[in-house]
Amino acid sequence: MSSPPVLVATRSVHKLEEIRDVLADLPIHFLSPADLGLAELPEEDDLEPFDTFALNAMSKAKYFHGRSNIPVLADDSGLCVDALGGGPGVRTKRFAPEDHVRRWGRTEANNRWLLEKLQGVEPSKRRAQYRCAIALSDDLQHAGVEDLVEGRIAEAPRGSNGFGYDPLFLVGEGDETFAELPETAKMSLSHRARALQRARPWLEEHVIGGR
Image (cartoon, rainbow, N blue to C red; front, side):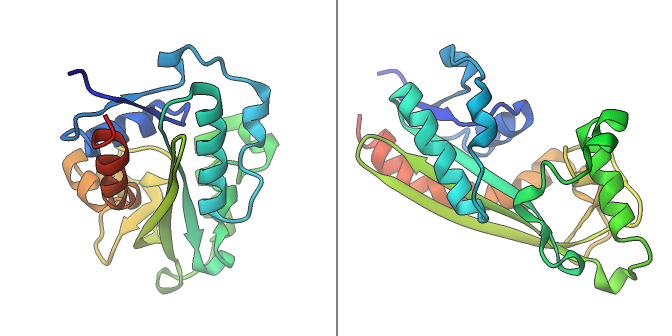
């Protein structure tokens, strides 16, 4: 019997690869929207209108379930910095001003803007969390799980692995950024990996067990 499909509600190749890697032992075929021929529509820009990761993740899960009619796994995740009052939070992806984005591209602009916002903040006050909410949806059930990883914001980017703010996120009390860690180490420590582990029981019951 072939593996049952689950649509991963993301256009990010990096996120899709991470999810597939973390859950590689499950007999599930994790698909991207492109795998199903789901064209990227302008309305997808409006799928994250809420002020919590959990509600945004569920918004994406329900939307893509409606378009695909197969079980969906969606995540919404971001960086929460204590010195910024929990920001950028749900604005993590769209943190930097648009003129910065036009000049440097979104990822570099976001990192530069974060460092600018924290300029002069001493290391002991640069604490942050990477947070991830996972939403799961099929014809009958919806569920959500969350997890996080604690760390600090470095004063300059380091490392070439990872994506997003990884070069600036010092993991735990250590002195390595996510971008400096080997991929296997990041998979065991990251906020998304931890949240995905919490999603396993739902996948096992409603996807694998429901065949």
